[in-house]
Image (cartoon, rainbow, N blue to C red; front, top):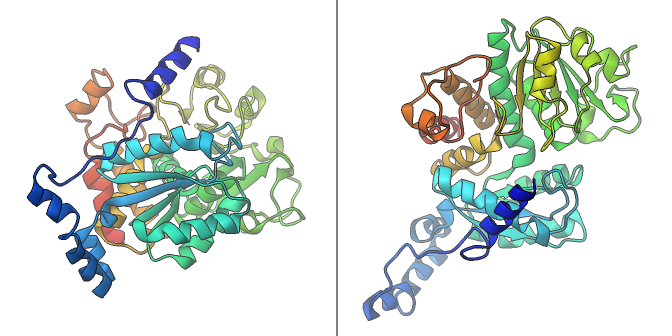
Length: 396
């Protein structure tokens, strides 16, 4: 870990601090170039945009520019680190947008005392951008912020911690269930963790056909008798029953999806699950159960985590660059449920196809095929840009 810390800090500091720079997309080497890039020539697109705001997509980078914006209240698994400390993560997100989908990003870290102050800031800067990617904002404020911004703006607004995770989980689960000879409508699904990611995942799975979902948080099963429910978990509450704890909920479960904490899934809970179960242990950096531990308890598991050093990484980089690419290409005014479902199905289908040599080389593998250790495409799969973005644009 000491070696990782040094390499990570060196990576961010040298040869220049940070991970981003701004480059001109037009020449500026002569007096004539300067007269076009700035005054007097720049006045012409100003007049055009003033007369017709839609031409901003023609004369500026608005149509390929996304704001990655945060208040720093829920940074990675570190918690409320503040706006400034969140900047390395936002820069990292920008790198992935550019690397995987060719999308330019300005990372914006906002000191906001209230959600309404944050909303006001985003609304005021929104004309600059073709889309808004909200990041690392704590629940339940993240729900309110996203909903308000979607109502106030005419460009796509997307909270990746919620919906990016949901798309990848849905895509991976469709394939994991098929491998286990099960189906989404008939699967008994238990969530441990009912924050932003958990609620969004459950809602998307319900939309795609799941019928048996039990949400569990630190207070137990979320049922309609609970007095502490909020708008975003109330619709996921089940009817009151004798099932009040994670122990009871896991009896005969086909699927466990953890978005909670390290070591939250113990051996007794794993043994309670149905034959051929699916376990998605997504807490980062330390999952609810390590794959080595789970597989030692049972040999019939299909498992995924959020980590790149284990098979089946549920990685948001498989979603947000391509979702925004499709939305921007379609000039969509919002990201709809249909667009998210289209992305999930495109990802699911791609994992079933033969893996190109470029992917094998990137991961130093001799072979890779659809199965228990490969239920979701790898982030460096070059087919993602066309397949997922095209599906999203079509849905838009």
